[in-house]
Length: 241
Image (cartoon, rainbow, N blue to C red; front, side, top):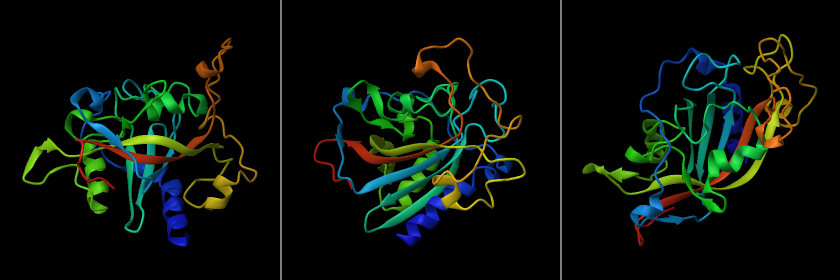
């Protein structure tokens, strides 16, 4: 448990650091529905992911509205195997859209989980034609570290498994840091337990959309901390974690 807590802490503190990173390989695009190709979604509960994201765009045109907007970190954990972590920038054209509505938890299912209401299994990012918000290269690297091959090593164009979000375990909007604070020295408990952290305009501005009544179309402040269950689309009979 202590090891896993440290890894989650790593995801939280990496948000400002990855602003110095270069471009990530692989483009995102809204994923095809694997069920149309005869694949089935297998979910054992043995693989989970924790995502820490500044969910503020725009993603594809112009600079994000916040200093760390569209950047995040992910830790994927496989029971009895271990965890693998990576930083990322949200790919354009994905199921997350332009991240106009910030940390609006009412949009989590449509952003991360469902192709349509009641149809879970949105791929997180590849491989190949099943790209989404996470770069396919990053996705393949994460799962290979956990002993899960997404493509055939002898034929990389042959997709074996497509990692996807099967369900949400927990979600939370963590307030932006207060003045003169940066995430690189905030303790995880301060982030997750909401201990006196206040918004910091103008670096983290109020992006409330005036005149909007529909709560699903309103902007919400903060970083998104999301824990999800990962399933795998594959041909029937394919062994999956």
